[in-house]
Length: 455
Image (cartoon, rainbow, N blue to C red; front, side):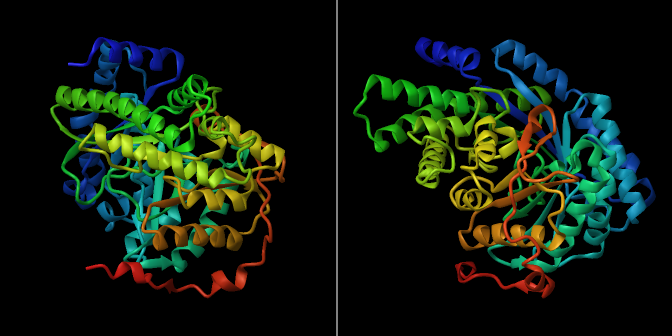
């Protein structure tokens, strides 16, 4: 049983420091639904079987423990595989069905309109990728993730080249919302099978029939812990601050473990993992950027930012691993620019550039996330940015991802507004636009690195 002091600390973290369960994501396998003409009916039946009470049970647990659960989500098996025999038009109909079912039962987002193409593009993958601009611009809740690289397979430049055009098309189709469709599309290297965070969540092929994965976030909690440690001991060094972050992450992870297991028990499904990721929101006091500034940086993007982020990410993972035997997903620190008020402001001031963000992704949990770029950035440049990020992922044997939003009609320095947890962002300049065309147009696949030979 938790001690009285731990209970008081948790109450303080919730009410004063923005601690919450960012996402409860139910993963649902759809493999048994791959049945030609009956596929839509079978998908609907399977989702309703498991998820019809997800929101109500989350609400009960939220009231019982007083811990906010911000998002209730679903992740399904990659539709490119489940619906491989369907036409592109039928895949679009499946996406619309997913959107409507989620609206019906109160789900915020659904992931899994996805494909795995790191070693080649299959027929089903091609149909799904071609449909992405239409699907993401016409649905509210459907999210898509495309895995184009892995340490074992290398980088599929052919797929990345296609995605540059898909991202441009998706932005144009949703131009009245500043290209918002692109906020629901993420390109991965080494995609995890159990990620509860959107837009990258999907139900991995090795997962059980149904599972609950939980994403816990606490940038405000970590920031306050670091502030208090510095105030209590002005002579504390970075090693001491790393220890403070680790211990704080331990407490946050225990909250996620409690909520996840309780919801899984109530719904009579398997409990999967806790993803301890410091995922910010647009509100003040809930920012990874604020943590970095508390660690002594005058602005995010200044020299030392990458080192501070590396220390933060490592300490978060160490603390989480001690608190739960089921830590998974991405786990660490996210740096989504539009969703972090301090990072967005750093872009406006010019201290945080695309190049510095790329350097930071080598040590954080995801990658170039929720970055608004000028609308006239060409497709090949977008593809080249993705390729650079995928290279960081495969060489370092880590998950990396890209969510770029080329905002139609906007230029560097202007502000795009996406709303809700997606936030708002100043447009980041893209240097050397249109200078990567020859490289990307070679196509093919960059071979797997030496690190892949580890058997």
